Length: 255
Ligand code: BV8
Ligand code: ZN
Image: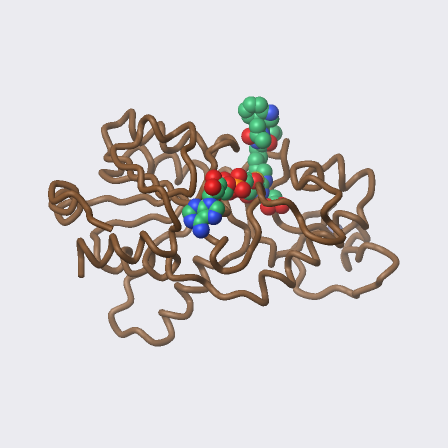
């Protein structure tokens, strides 16, 4: 893919970068997006119905099992070239923030992997707006737990208070973690370059970040398989796979 010389020049000189990622950024790792029809046992359910406090209250076992299935799926996949390209970007530019809607922890996985092997590792924030499916907490007292009995009959309960355990993710209708959201808004407002990657831009308040960046004069680059509500405001819209386009962009600018 060719990138406009003026874009390449601008990116080489830019100081503050923010990248918002959605399920599309993990799709090439083999994880379904929310728009993809679910498979097998879960085909009959819509994710937006299962990812809610109401669904958990109505049928905690069904929701617990759905997340247990997704947790196993996440454990079985690897980051893709798009995740690695974003990490490379974070090592090459002065200021970089990853803002992710994904709960799969793949951005963090790449960072931890690099930390172990790289002498010149440069740290950067990864803001998990919607939590992390690998973390489990008590739905009553909020205590986190690393292990729980895998009882096929019942949802495991908190060792401290006996409350039902739940995944540490943000369900529809639940507030986002305040510190992550505030940091994300700040980063979107202050950045010179905002990348929106693999997100349909339908879920709020994450979807408002690209507009906030645009309104503050940031250069907005969108990489997605399809146009989204942000596309009309994007300075550059690269329609295609993030696992292909991101490495090419990083190579063209910082190669
Ligand atoms: C809140 C964790 C208030 C759980 C998730 C009406 C209007 C506006 C807003 C609302 C409304 N009614 C309700 C709301 C609010 C609601 C919302 O936005 N609803 C939407 C559906 C209308 N938002 C909330 O409820 C939020 N909370 O507002 O709280 C509040 C405030 C104070 C106090 C109390 C309450 C909470 C939202 C978070 C929900 N949790 N995830 C879990 O994962 O199980 S959201 C979940 O869905 C994902 O995390 C993700 O964010 C979202 C799916 O979006 P995407 O990531 O974009 O994925 P999607 O599949 O949609 O798109 C993928 C894109 O990638 C596609 O465009 C595709 O073309 C592209 N693609 C695919 N492959 C590739 C690719 N692109 C590039 N390369 C590829 N290879
Ligand atoms: Zn508890």
